[in-house]
Length: 196
Image 1 (cartoon, rainbow, N blue to C red):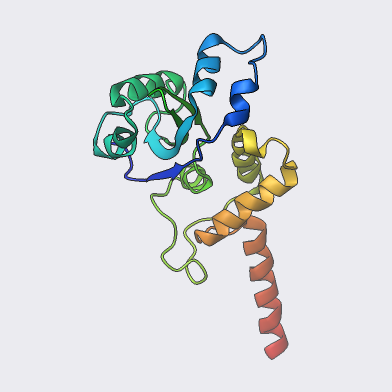
Image 2: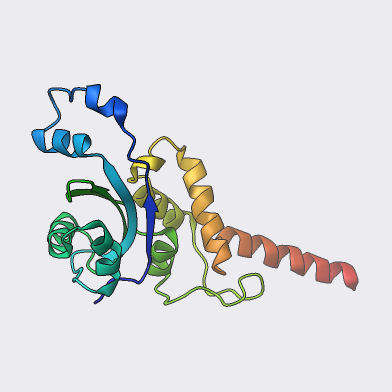
């Protein structure tokens, strides 16, 4: 399986004059201190398959301009994601430093992938407002929200809000909540009774 062709590179300012006066705390490793002193060269966003990433054009084109070794990233990424479901698309935020080192953070798979996996479908609806490809129940929504809560940037979001986000993503794919489908069918049958 090859890497998805999604790669976005964001350049970050390297003016860290205040970083030179900041001494790393005792709990930070020497390697982290060296990277902080080197300065951030770029922040690169990738999406790679968990545990089975292979060096290829998508990774090479994203890392090459910053002087990063593609094989080192692939080995470290595969080691970090070996316990995840193989081939699930994992968003990665890679920080490239001026001394040609890097660090990266993996996130949970996209919500749309988790919805498709929960329903066993390959893709969402072509016309989400008109076409329905499946329905989610609240247990499935809660399970997906539990997975998404593992992301560092979502830890402080209330669980109900995460569930609402999952429901919104599912609806945009043509996957309404099962309760909504039941409500709509009962309201349309009562509308039919009013006509007669």
